[in-house]
Amino acid sequence: MTQVFTGFALAERIQAGTRAMVGRLGRAPVCVTLLDPANGAAAAYLARQSAMAASAGVRISASDWGNDPAARLAAYAADPAVDAVAALFPLPHGLTPQAVAALVGAEKDVDGQHPTHAGGLLLGDGTTRPPATAQAALLCAREILGDLRGADLTLVGASRLIGRPLAMLLTDAGATVTLCHAETRDLATHTRRADLIVTAAGVKGLIGRDHVAPGGRVLDLAVIPTAAGLVGDADRAALDSHAALVSAVPDGVGPVTTACLIANIAKAARG
Image 1: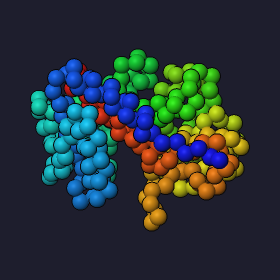
Image 2: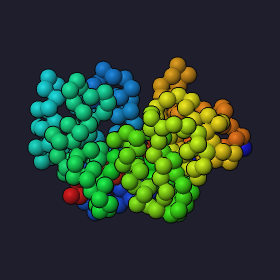
Image 3: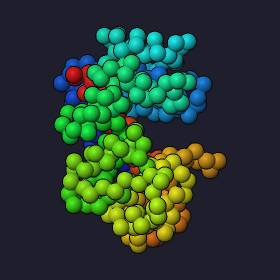
Image 4: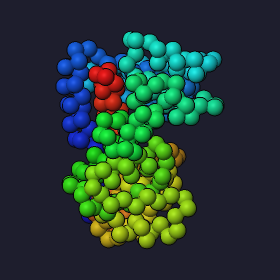
């Protein structure tokens, strides 16, 4: 029987730490999140984020992009009443996550895209704020495998938001990391030998039975909308009773990612 991993218990432990941080701060940290309010999926996601943040004593306020998105970002970055600024996809035309981070500044960047945070992660200084999904994947990997020193992990997807920063975090944790991407030849060769496959390619059904050794484990970070609901990279039907563990989508890494983002907001308020 294949175990389905969910992140709710782990997320609650992170939330408990955030509540303690907020208690020491003595006030509610404030994050302004910019989004297109006409995008129903983004608005629903922000509503879930806001509810979870409130339970930790953190306040997330929604803002649209206005007529001049760059100016709006700069205004929130300069507002002393705002501790953190975040942005939800899709971004306005011409803006990238890195451009958003540059306008927001390192102190208020909670998405880990500012060069200060990205550079600190690369240098392994231990003081940076990595992207929330990468943090969450590291914590979930520890939850699944325990001590990561010497473990073989294969990452599928080399994005700047997840794959690359996660490779650094896992390396610092002592894991042996194989980073696969669109140009990788014979993906199954790399995934079948892994103690844990971490996939974030955004390709429905990419990881099938041939990619996973009997008793293998898959941590699925992808969230892909379909007519039947949200799915990930892993072909759950093909892996049932073959893999030892497959994470739920979106309830595997998803709750942990949100908890890590809320913790980043509290850290930004703490300074």
